[in-house]
Image (cartoon, rainbow, N blue to C red; front, side, top):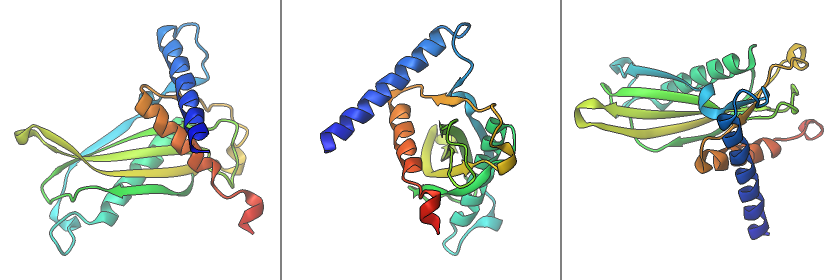
Length: 194
């Protein structure tokens, strides 16, 4: 039922936030198996050039997707310590167009990691990239796109034990992490890929 799934989500989120709070409050005695979500973050900032505009004078969406993918891959690579295996795009939200001449910031972070789910055929890591247009002269920063990428591991890297579980900073982050965990859980299992 809908209310039991909400209760399950809320309970999971509260548990993750309590663990995150304990980890932040007692870092010297906390387990080394965890990392705070924002500690996995990376970002790029660049000026949008006319070479990448579409027929309408806006930045070409494929170019923005490539920039997001490159940052997501780099984030997954630095988090795992080895090359990740790309599985799929979880979702893309195009909220606002980006103009030539805009300052565009991409921020990425690992929002879900399943250290036990290391498999070539299953994604185990979710990286979210948010794109924002920054206009310093107007004192604004507006989110324009959100990209979600799913990664796994190569066969030779399956046994490495360097993975850490990601903990949220806020209830909003916990809800995102829960929804991305559900996304990974819905990913087709190997037997259904035939």
